[in-house]
Image (cartoon, rainbow, N blue to C red; front, side, top):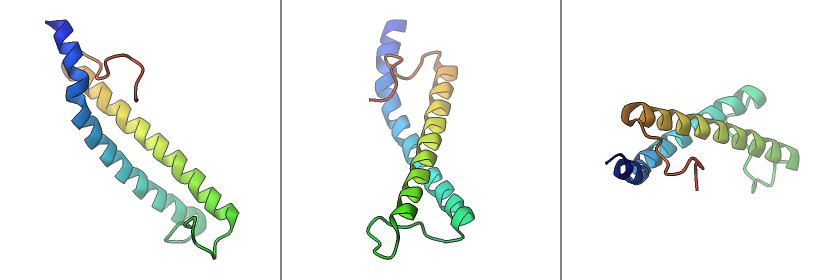
Length: 100
């Protein structure tokens, strides 16, 4: 019985993981907006296709946004996985490899 539970949990976790990813993306976006405003005193970060922005500020914004997104996504994923493990006793991914 425990073997069946372990096999079905990763599939059952998929919708939860999707919802957590959406929430994490939203949180990361908000964190980036606040961080950019603190750093550059601008409401909007530069867009790569904005002809009035220089390469440096575009790449800086992209690097900061990527770092924040990765950190928030990892924190949200880990928190969700630990909550599933605490409530079911099983790690939510079939193998301990993590994301696809």
